[in-house]
Amino acid sequence: MLKRKSRSGKVLTVLVLLFVIVGLCGSAVSADEPNVETKLPEAKLQAFDASALELPGASSLGTAETDLKTFDGVDSDKKSGIAVERPIVTNAVYEVDGSLMNFTDSLQVDDPDDFWFFSVNTDRSMVLKLLSGNSDYLAQLYIVDWSTGQAYPTSVGAYAQTQIALKNLPAGDYVFRVYSEGSVGDNYTLRMNAANPADYSSLLSISDSLKYVVASYANGNIYSSGVLVGNTQSYNSHLDWTREFYFSWGSGYNSRTHKISNVKIASVSAPVSYTSAYASSNNAILIYLNEGTSFMHHAAYYQSGPDHIYESTFDDTLGKRTPRYLDEEDIEGYGPHILVYDLNTQKAIDFYSVLNYYYAAGIEAAPTVRALN
Image 1 (cartoon, one colour):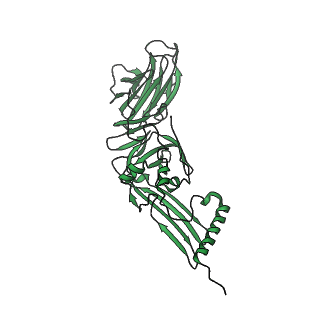
Image 2: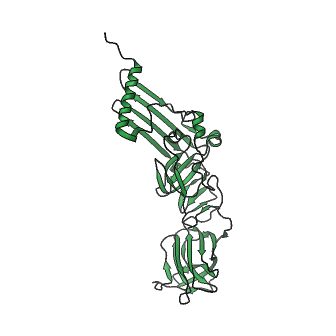
Image 3: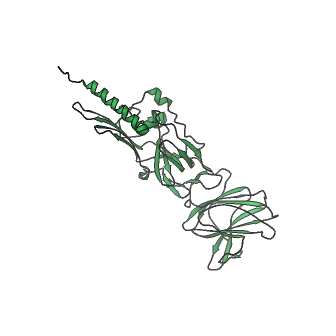
């Protein structure tokens, strides 16, 4: 007499089949076991290294304006203009394409002045640095009026080994005149970043090369070298992030989904390079999430058959039902929760948090980050 197989026997058969599939498919399904229980033991949660991505000054909205001379606007001296004309033909005159500079040259007896021309098509802010071993060197900003063929000096400028900021650089044509108030014969490096909008309220981070400048504004906006990161005073729909896993084997499937939406920003980091098992970027910024951000986690397992199996849960690694908003316990007890934003593609690419099952369960190692210069 034949006996009907028990459900436990069928489950065992299914598990054996899954192990065979995993062996054939390699790492394609290694991140998910056929078990939708996602609440992790407290010991596992405490072992999660929430500080793995911490960078100096990244955990709160700080300032990079220490020892930085700041000009509010540009005033020109119409009585002291110098002649300029196109086409530019001398070796000491350069036209710069874009709003970034990082150039090295020298001043000589027969070439005592260098002119670096640039334009901005909207009102901007600017950070400028002049590097040289010659303390007599000066980089001075001039306003160019091509209709009159004149460039007019302003009060904005930087001596060697100093860095200055300008809050409001109106749209227009400009030139930096690099010259010496004493001796010549030495090299210099001129660096400028005029990519961010005008009238920032605070400079949050400035890289040594000035390629990466992060600024915040009174309306809550945060920009990184001309790219809008987000707003600290409202929700940020452009920062929505989803990670979906789905694997099927003909008679069943296994799935897991994480979603971040309605992002509320607490703070940001300086720009970084970012590498994880899931995503990477050579120009990213870490966004520290605030209370009120929406989080959803769902996991499911299905196996067809006479005694089919279907398991599903919306619980997260803390055992809380989702979708839900991040609350004080999440931030204070289990934070930080970091959304990684790719500044090149302007998309969120990863989520490093104890709420991310892959990181919290130790399936994927902590990402590596490096501050960009």
